[in-house]
Image (cartoon, rainbow, N blue to C red; front, side, top):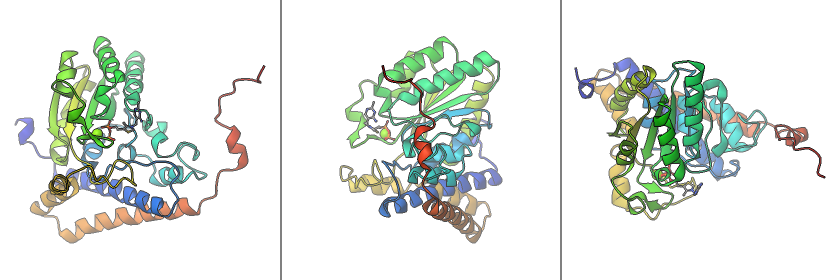
Length: 328
Ligand SMILES: Cc1ncc(C[n+]2csc(CCOP(=O)(O)OP(=O)(O)O)c2C)c(N)n1
Ligand SMILES: [Mg+2]
């Protein structure tokens, strides 16, 4: 059976559905946290893009690693991080995943193989390549997945990272999550040539484009790519086309996007697509709504615990800081 004819089992789609519901519920709480002035610093949401995180991370094992960008909540949750510690991090509270010092764009959890969100567009690419080099030198068959946006392909690290991954034949999957915009600008107005796939192929990487709002198809494709890379295929690039439902940051009204474009994209909501498949295959709507409600309850609890948590103690200001010695 060709890849395009394969469908994950209903149980697997249920898992994908649950993961996507958890990501969306977390990010809805980030909206509430912004409205209640609890979120410290900027936060970028992936509402509408959840299939990419769920479909790809669902095919990774704990010792595989990911590097993310500024829009990283979904990747982090799908890789297994604790949402309550993430929410504490966004609120700057004690028990935050990075001690409350990093905020949304610096969430990392090495224990689950999440090497970090990143506020510098494109910077995660080089972190992923370095991590993949380490995996190879250590002789593991773990792989590294690097998530970045369509804006990042116009930055230098994209060229450097893909080139070195090819030269050293590294076990890394580059995932270009193309939501058509880099902040407020359409990337087709900023990008020369034929885009990420053509650029990757010019450096010798196998590359392809896929529907980033198709969680079932992505799960099958990612399973195949991860297996190929684990077995030594070398680096590959997956360009996934998706769309963010809301603005660049939580507070961006995104008036630069045509209403019809947003409305059309919402008809391809990945959560609704997974739900439709499950209903067609015998799931009861009430059971699926219960999964969504459970995700909501989990994230409300994370929100409330983080909101009520204490601030870090004063001594925390001087910990995790590089000691550069006394000034001369
Ligand atoms: C090197 C650098 N340049 C500019 C910015 C400001 N900036 C933050 S996010 C962003 C857009 C990135 O677009 P894309 O890579 O497509 O990711 P998306 O936000 O669409 O997920 C920009 C320009 C930055 N953070 N880093
Ligand atoms: Mg983008």
